[in-house]
Amino acid sequence: MLGNWRDIDAVTGLKEADRMVKSQPNHPGPWLAKGIFLARPAPTIVESLPDGGVRKTYNRPVRYEEAQRAFSEGIQHALRATNERHVLLNLLRLHRAEVFRELGQLPEAAQDIAAALGICRRDPQTPNRLVDLSAFYSAPLVECWTNWGFAEIRSPSLDLVPGSRQMFAGVEFDVRGVLMPGGIAPANSLACTYARSIPVNLACRRLHFLHATLRASNVGAQVGTYWVHCQDGRTESIPIEYGADVLGWKDESAQSQPPFRASVAWMSKDHNGAVLRLYKSTWTNPRPDVPVVSLDFSREQGDASLFLVSVTAESVESERLAGNLR
Image (cartoon, rainbow, N blue to C red; front, side, top):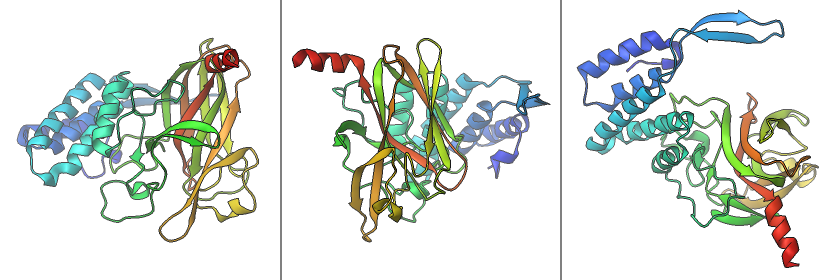
């Protein structure tokens, strides 16, 4: 293969991948490499901006449709191969899911993620206010997700968390997987430290986030941000601060100093007796009658590694219906 593909530019990588496809057309590996480089832009000019930012221009557009076809071809070859190539099969599915997301084909992305990660499908009766993360999950609850990448080494996972629709801290959540952009992706993933355009499409008074960090951090450190995109074009940011909105899922200080803007939503002990916790943070919408179109989730680089399990919107319509019933 191409070794560490991160160090190879898109044009060079695609030429080498094409050569590999010609020499091994029935092997899924070259098709994986080809898809990766088709989905990568080729920067040609890096320009420093007055505000300290950077603008990049590209000499070749990203070719997502061709990348999708390359990954699909590789999947077909992997399915015909022996079980020894199951790792490549799942990598191809995960990469194709990323391309599907970029193309706006979320049901197809969700299917690939479910097949690759073994995540159960969403109950079709689940209400829309339980935000659907099916197309965005990074790992299942029941796997060794801190080391995920088809490694044989096992470590504590979230398999003790009750799955599917669950009530935590008075809020119903759809609990089936874990979203931690880039932090628990397999080797050679395209993943970065954000997930964008998670559909909501509801007018809501509040958003409830079920989350934690993988490791402890300094109190007051910002470990991530949720971005709320509204129908009127405005964007609200929700910074997540360690010690205020979230703590580490194994942080023992939670016993004496719980986060003051969040509550413990779920608590249990792992097989070694360590206490595990997930936290519920709530954001109040300053403009509840303006529909929320989508969410973005970015985590800060560093050891804390904020991860998201579920999001629930407290919709305006559901509150009105509840009021009428009373």
